[in-house]
Image (cartoon, rainbow, N blue to C red; front, side, top):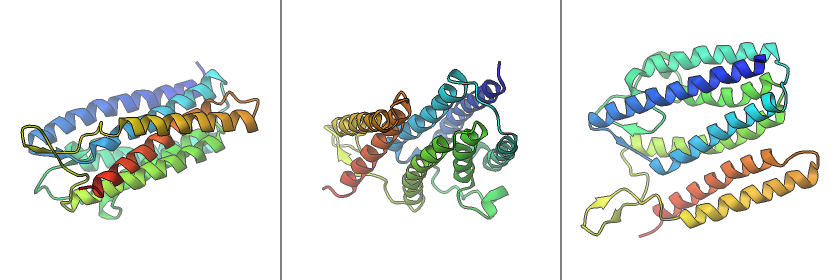
Length: 241
């Protein structure tokens, strides 16, 4: 097994273990009265990270193996230390979702003493640095831009939830009970935007880079289309009766 495959295997196992930990913490927080804010955006986060990691496996291992740049690998190891610091500081409050526990104070230890969103800073660093470990500069920059868009929207939702404001319009059920917005109301719009972005960027890559398969363009289009659909859906929710 190549060094590139070993590195990506470690990252993949790490992400899977974190999903298990996040689910356990989410259930515990909900049992304490916590509620999830902005659940509609969460599939977009999953798609982004799965596409990023899957693309690295394809480009650095299946299409490779590519050589490893040691200085960037050292920086990635440092980021893992910072990630552990964030996890230790949040403890049972850490989760991949936005879960608000009414009345619970904000965490103010560890890196949270100086930075409001250190976890997102670490993730942004990883999104850029790991592709650089394999010499995939354009890949790292492209996904960094997509990640910045997703984080901008996620932080907006999180700040509104912490301020006690709803992250989406309520709708009336047949029983008269008011519930959170229905995440499937705009499924058709999401489908159109995602298909359009995937097809458009696939065609762009195949046209201007004929030796490429178009996979990277399609993956970026998938994430970009999902982001645009999520933003538009939330905009409609915020500005409709």
